[in-house]
Image (cartoon, rainbow, N blue to C red; front, side, top):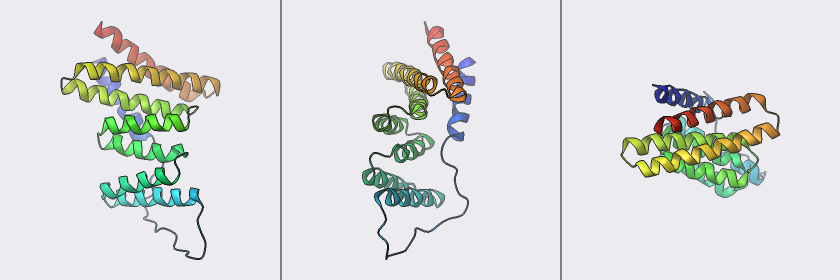
Length: 181
């Protein structure tokens, strides 16, 4: 029962995470006279990806987000957007890979480590349901490590709300570990 409650709580947090989605479709700027900077081009690609998502063109959206990462590989937000898309598509291994890449770009960003922990938890559940218990156990351990890192970062930054959220997630993960043993 506790596992199901933890899963539902985490799902609610993931659905609530991320950039606010616009309800209006916006076209990319078409000013041919000005040369956009790298950051502006990256933002345009992200906006194009969001537009593709709104139109149901998932493949084009992912390509646009990938292009944004290639355009500006040091911007962790580009990885976060793509990782959240993979989470929503239930492509948990890709989400884990994307959030892991984001942690290398922004090793002091607690929110990314928190998202990495959630992606690992979802990956664990998927592996359990498919019978791959060793990979499920590895994902569980990775989730614990990621959430512990987020706790450390939030504590250093004195971010009380996110610290509490991460502690609650760690508590749920450790209780789940104790139930297995």
